[in-house]
Length: 75
Image 1: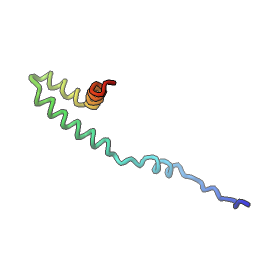
Image 2 (image 1 turned 90 degrees about the vertical axis):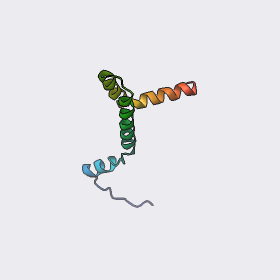
Image 3 (image 1 turned 60 degrees about the horizontal axis):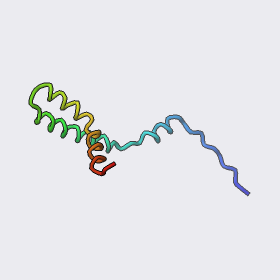
Image 4 (image 1 turned 90 degrees about the horizontal axis):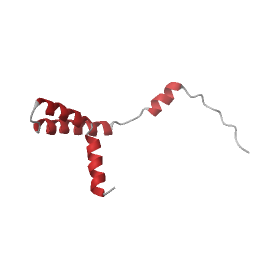
C-alpha cells in the first residue's frame, strides 16, 4: 500500500526565487570582452566615425568570433 502524501502549497515567490538563480558568469565574460574590444577598436581607429563604428562592433564581437570560427572549421 502507498502512503498518502500531503501536497505542499507552493508560493509564487518560492518559484520565482528558485527560477532566478543565475550566477552571471556569461555576463562577466561578455563584459570583459566588450571592454577589450572597445579598447582594441578605438586604438585602431583613424577618425571619429571609425571610432564610433568600433564601439558598435564591440557590442557584437561574439558574432565576429563565431563567424571566423565557422569559417576556420569549414562549416
